[in-house]
Image (tube, rainbow, N blue to C red; front, side, top):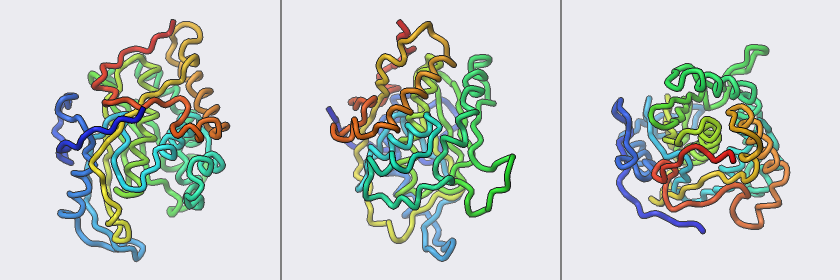
Length: 295
């Protein structure tokens, strides 16, 4: 069942450098972010396209949050998250959940899974070694093997994981479109955060979107935020109950589960919500999620 929560005032775009409690941030800061861009943003025209832009802005969202926005397709956001975990780049899977999407937008620049799939086990091992580490970082932009044309660099530069009471995901963006980008990025990074949290047996916390250029295009300014957030948790079933608890083994099981979801999306599209995803009435961190049962 899908439960919509009432809108409450979101946190400030610029957050204080301290642990944010679950009570302080209960719903999306998306409304606030959109208003900040509209009111405080400066007018520029990169590539000849008029935008309102904020420089260096960070906004917290719950891991597992689906922000309220007109024309939002949660199945697409979840599919992007599945492909991020699976390390795949299937356009067919995208079209299965969003047949009207401009598939030309989905290139090697926008599929992050193949870029980070070999890095995630290293991140998990680092957080096992030192749960307070600041070195658990996935590098998304750039390629040490081949030169990348500058117009093919992804919007996301890096993704950092920090355990500070809960597992937080910090996404560093060179460019962050608050209409078409942020809602789907929050969701796909939320899927990744839930998966890594399950591997480590810690509670999921927040997705912090940190953007160098946070902007809204003139052409999309009338696509409004709805002020309602929904939340989801992963439900990969038996995949997390195979064998003794081991973070890397669990990650391998989650990768297998995510690949199944990307290869056979038609199995859950008809049901209206993704297989392996359950709607919940509140954010995962408010539920007090602990280690996943390995028995």
